[in-house]
Image (cartoon, rainbow, N blue to C red; front, top):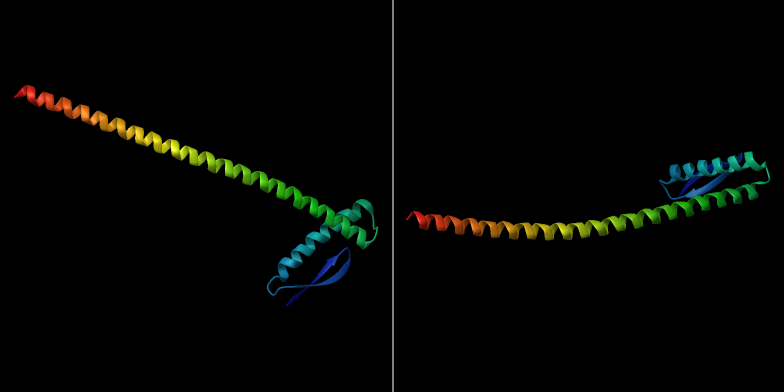
Length: 121
């Protein structure tokens, strides 16, 4: 098991993690420290526990907003896929209609050609 030292609000914390995840955990620690530092600048040094709680709430709010945005994007993707499927059905129908019209035109041309051949004989 890996171990990472994370500095938050000027204090070092040892954090365990899976082997190979050390850099990712360290980056998360840096992001959390940035949130805590921003809050400390805004409200002052009100204690680690309160700053950590406030930072956690800010991050939870950001996560909630990200989930909402992701849900909206997924709904839009689903809508586009649905309309794309409808467009494909309409395209297939148009192709069938065009093929039918071409077949009918070809049959008329053959009929006219036969009539012309019979008229020349």
